[in-house]
Length: 366
Image (tube, rainbow, N blue to C red; front, side):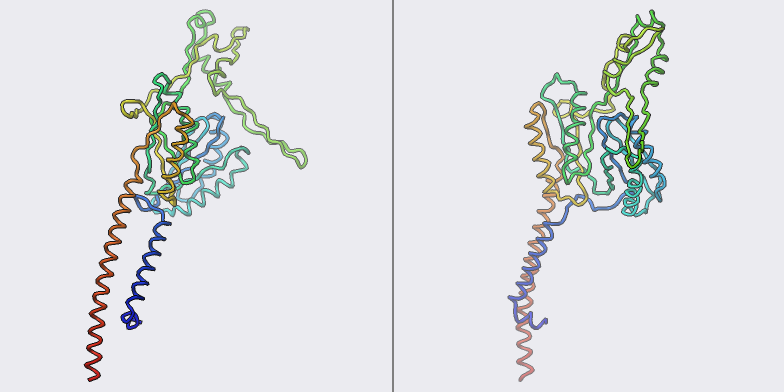
């Protein structure tokens, strides 16, 4: 075989070209990341349940899931973060735990708990953590209207922009930071305190009584099943303002006794862009996603959002795809140069080898 290749350098050149072409095709289909895909013993479960309060999500969703997931093998800790419309459960495992098997076990636990969860609940999104979960893009949002309340911009970004980004096929997580979180401030009017002897403890106990979730009820009639949902929670400022209060036999609305407003919580930190307060959304890709395809999706979505909401400004910073592109170009240049040098050396030594074999054959013949 070696003698055949030595006598036919064109065949050797064809093999080299075929290997180069196959390598180029494989490289185009291979996902690229800044860091290797090393598994971290942590699994996150994200659940979006729009239009429902944090208390309802905690009672009807988080508690059944916690009871089921607490039996997972090698589980070290389980933390939850619940807010209106969504919740996140984080499972931490012992180091050395096979994350792939833990991922399958977590999905099995969730499947076994579906009968206990609300019927209209979207299937929970289970995410494995890896060392390659480095944000590919940092999307900054600012408002062109300086009079727009930042709390309003934060709510809009959380309810619309963030969800649009997470719907992209190659996006795993869109982590939002720098936004304002809402809180409801209730201040009892001085005249209500004087005229009706109202104390803050009374208002606190009254609101707590009227802000609970009875849960779901299933009624079976023969072969038919009916799922009844009871809602009795205070979710908005308007709900609190129109809450009826019985004071000494007289019926009042809570807004007649107290001033109720929606304000932003004290911020834990601020993000600014060119001197203007901004919201940051860190975009993390899926493990098997291609950077070039994700870049096309993100930029296309950004252009669409800019046209739909011209009052907002979108800025893409810390574009990791540029660093990856430069690294790939350097790698391609090194491969091309190395291949050319290897081919030249190979043909040079093949030529010398052919001459030596010819001289040896003549010598042996003589």
